[in-house]
Image (cartoon, rainbow, N blue to C red; front, side, top):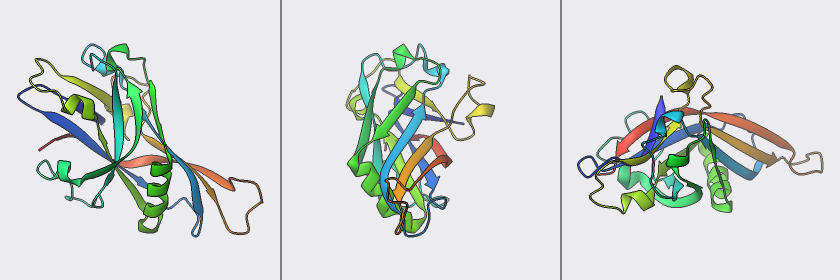
Length: 193
């Protein structure tokens, strides 16, 4: 699958996506010291992407991504604080170009999500959503968790979360551990209304 975010056109409006990561690989009682999310742009965006440099943003979610919790009608209201952004221009696409999101706010949100077992994130492009009457779409297509079967590239890479953490009584060097977690859920192209 894929994750499409940005502005389709004046008739169809803005598109947002959501991601979910299973945090069970992080030991109980661990303290998350760093969280980094990577999205990889699908080659299919070439020729359709943003005409101007824009920031792609990750947002916290006001509700967990339980089945049926995110719908076309409520998606926009579930996006809360911006956590991290990465600059991009889909017109200059490079196969599997990595967009890296890392910030203190993202790390804090991941730490707060640890008790619930999943990290749920919204993905949007606010610079494009602010535009009106676009004659053609300006958007990004990112590989989803099961992108290999759907992507325009056989080398597609799904969304990932890299977490560094410390544990009580650890080895005395930080971080005590690192884990890379692949997204377990991706809901693409949610209209912004």
